[in-house]
Length: 392
Ligand SMILES: [Zn+2]
Image 1: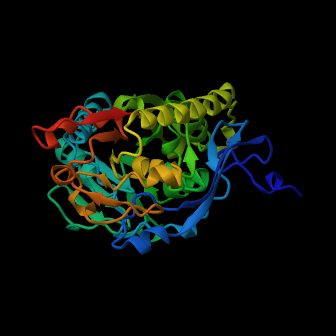
Image 2: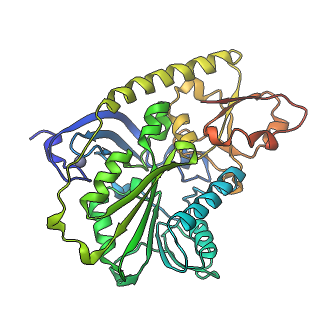
């Protein structure tokens, strides 16, 4: 039996038609875990990444993913909202959901609520009651509009009343998304219908950009709009809308679920896929790799430079660089205070606040990992110095 015959697609559950797309060997399993010491960072847990494309439903997934290697505990820090840009994106996102999908006075369950700020904001603005689940949640268990449980949502919380069910940046971390969604739906007590809101990165954006640093171990699945629709319809959800957010990097699906109208036997999906995307992806990541090489070559020979953003993109990018280039990066910059003085997984580069640039006059070139933040970066830079900000 070959390797591929052992694997079935985690989304449509078919066993054939899987094509190898991309591989990274021995890669850090966590990008958003920060380390107190250099040794801990370079000796971090590692895993294999082999992306397969399912020709049946279009999902892309890491066939060598092992969920037991990951720990979403308190060292997991993916807080983005220290950025003003990110804060306003959350606000706009909440306003849109309330107005367009009439989320007012509801019971909102947020599975994988992270630090809870999205649920808190949505519950408050929509006069709703929120219940958030996340094992990495640290904070008060009760706020004025939401209740938080530092745990996975399991059967012990069932039946759980829900009018709105949210999965923001969750499905890309789950190795069996089909089974996961179907199981969660069974825990719910739904009166009439339930709106389901799912936000994930858009793989089409990664393909278009060739941003190979958006592919990392924490994300086991990569969805296009079509493959996400295929998954949701295959478990009996009625997809109302799928649209982009965050300048195209993320997409949001809105679906409705009416348990009394669903019989899984009636669900007969004709999947549609776009396999030309595979070739474009391969071409664009090679092109992007060349572009990055050219950008670094334009910096003064052997000069030091830095990276802005010590989250998943920055950590993955650092780990993809060859060791001669890595040696030219004395630190990586992030505005999240919780990361300062800590070390990035794999390469072990130290994370520093922007103020480090006042002392390190030898660092003038800054590669910005997320183009969405480039406008706000100059505010953090020391005055009277000239920096070269490059978005990749
Ligand atoms: Zn599939």
